[in-house]
Length: 260
Image (cartoon, rainbow, N blue to C red):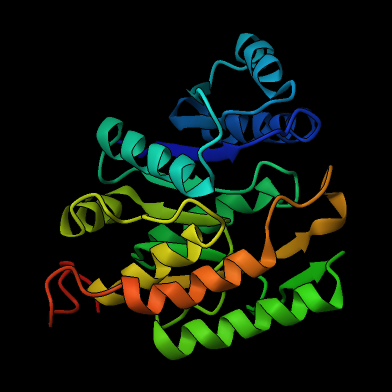
């Protein structure tokens, strides 16, 4: 039986970006056919995002929307998404997450899925720091911050084969997410902000994961609207992970079956 590819999009106030992104995903639906789904978590948007999604659901049969009544943050949107896919889909299925602001090129999705399957990995990260990756449209300070974060996480939460811990563009084997959720008693993500993506990686590092990267050209110049990330708050969140993230059972590591 062919696995289902689920594209997960946490979205907050993306009324202008989604009409640009969703037609690109329609092209992928032709490639993947019936085994293709898109799940958008509308995180209490206060603009016209809900209306855009309501209209899009009439157009795209592969689209499903989960609404938060109020804005709860990226971490809670990711929690909602992970809990939904692990309960509704099979362990062999694949979740691909990417940003809803049109800065991630969905044409990379087939390559991420192919690498995940061919190399029997748990996770593939679309990485700015893999050979061939780039960051377009980011300020010098933002690029410097990204590289500092890479060094920090490689030092304290090393994962072989991964350098980009904050990229939200990833392909996960749902069976691995199930195992991680069980080990952490559904406390895989405890932060509500943008540091949630790095928190997931930090927790994966404590239980073992087979992971790889695929080069990403981050097209930040295509972003519609201002960034929602508070850099100072995110950096502070990274340092808090040193205290928060421990193995799910004290003193144990590498407990996920089949990992290295």
